[in-house]
Image (cartoon, rainbow, N blue to C red; front, side, top):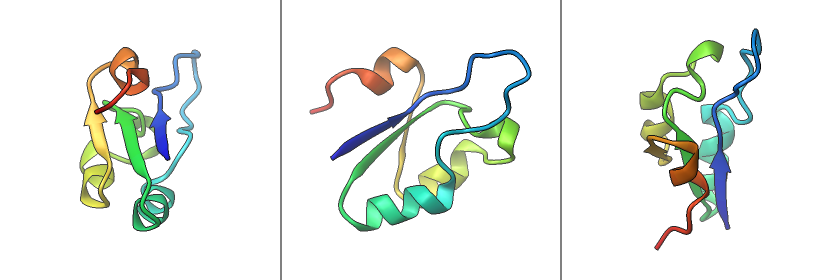
Amino acid sequence: MIIGVPKEIKNNENRVGMTPSGTAELVKRGHQVYIQHTAGINSGFPDEAYEAVGAKILPTIEDVYAPQT
């Protein structure tokens, strides 16, 4: 399965849809996880934390939701 995680766009909303530990579990089970650049930064999760567990960081929401090959 391919899973995309967007950056929150609402004012004063600092949550992110997936933590690095949740990402690690999905990647471990064979899923592909795409995270929008800086999606987790306001929750204390830098892009590097997601990359370290196997997610791919993409620059825009359009890239996250675009078909991946």
